[in-house]
Amino acid sequence: MKLIYFAWVRERVGKAEEDVVPPASVTTVAELMRWLGGRGEEYAHAFEHPKSIRAAIDKSHVRPDTAIAGAREIAFFPPMTGG
Amino acid sequence: MQTKVRLQSEEFDAAAETAALTRGRTDIGALVTFTGICRGAESGEPIAALTLEHYPGMAEAEIARHVEEAKARWPLLGVTVIHRYGRIAAGENIVLVVTASSHREAAFAAAEFLMDYLKTRAPFWKQVESKSGKTWVEAKGADDAAAARWEKPSGREAAE
Image (cartoon, rainbow over all chains, first blue to last red):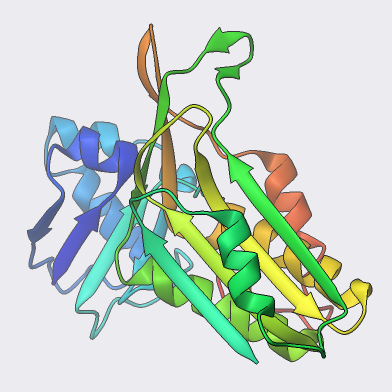
């Protein structure tokens, strides 16, 4: 699946997007964040406070307990500050 | 019902947009225009510019979805939403919401509803550019509270 990062999540991870294949044991958005947090120092920094990160699956807002099965694109970003 | 949703990096002309919405119409009795402008200072510190990052595709879809919801909730005769992205200098426009209806209540309510949702649900992130560097704007609890007041009691999901 394709992961996309925005704002300070993007800056901390050090890339705007990437393709990943998480292990089968990773089934929800929250689990995916935990797994990502274990991928290295920059990821640990980006995902150290998962409660302050929002997610979208295929361009729709989702909650942390949402299943990631079938997702093509998952985005992680800080709370939005538009308008 | 005239609906226009536009994302763009360039500046817009709010007066021209309202004129375009009402031109040739005699059914519109109320027009509310909100323009969000980049302030030149934040908490006493001068700001050179804002940079708005957005999620292409999702930003348009989220705005369009909330415009549809506004149309379902209030008897609107026209809606225009323009949101800029990229670098926006102090004094320039950031966002425009125009709502038209027969009577003022619908236009006022729909404009507030759309702005509250743009602030909290549309995937945009503001970064402040000042002398001390670049910093991401933090989301405000007050904006979440403003958006929450429009939620229906039937229990819309928080992440909807």
